[in-house]
Amino acid sequence: IERINTGGTLPLITSCSPGWINYCEHYYPDMLDNLSSCKSPMQMFGATAKTYYANKIGVSPEDIFMVAIMPCTAKKHEVGRDDQNAAGVPDVDVSLTVRELAKMIERSDIDFISLEDEKFDDPLGISTGAAAIFGATGGVMEAALRTAVETLTKEDLPDVKFDDVRGLEGIKEASYDVAGMTVNVAVASGTANAKVLMEKIKSGEKDYHFIEIMGCPGGCVNGGGMPQVSANIKNSTDVTAKRASALYTMDEANTIRKSHENPAIMHLYEEFFEKPGSHKAHEILHTSYAKRKINKHL
Image (tube, rainbow, N blue to C red; front, side):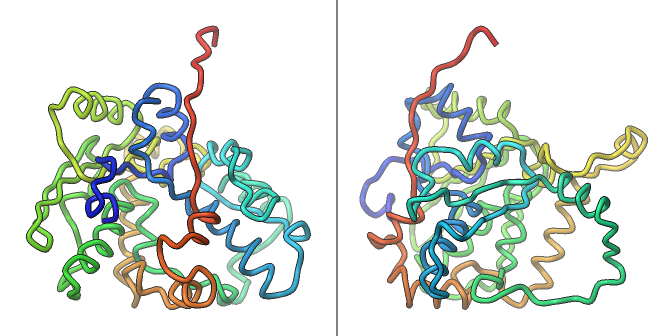
């Protein structure tokens, strides 16, 4: 919204997939200004924990060891990127994959069936339906649209579903009329499709306002760190589609389905970040990118 209102660089491209970010820095350095400067949710959480939460509980950031459980192997590289240290220490110390955590649970003989359900810790334990669908291709776009449309129209959405950006197709496109303005969006699933989309943008064939790109086909539910399934199951079941469907079911079951209506986040901005886009928010929650050389010997 800010880039549209101020004449900023468009299209705006999402930045939450580290695989995509690495690809863009290597192969499309001339498009780095198009990337959202927002850190990924993982890095935002770590940065917030080591600034806001550390101060709240009276603990030094150095004494907080932040572990993230992710579906993505590229997250292991992301934790060591420059400018990911809002409190002077790494925002996130270690990123483990879902598969690695599963192995640790098995080795520790933890029986999940016998464990009692517990609530996540406050103040950062509340999530929305919009957060759940981040893991499926098109989910980040849909979550952003829910907030953007309500922000621009200043009206509640009668239906929060944006079906045009859902599904496992390699490239999805849609246009929405929002507050008298036509907003063109696109979603690319996997770097092969990202390349197709980027070339069309550079040639002038396509014109968008906002683009979501995920490095893995299908999104994070098909990440390199997710549990593997046998060839027999793969041949008979679309595992990626089933995982994505589960996320949309979680979204529909949630009483809060829009990111900007998360009470924990609203309180966080009131108490600490002041407002979206504030100087403090940019210092802690945003990052930058740089051109990287391609190693032709690999």
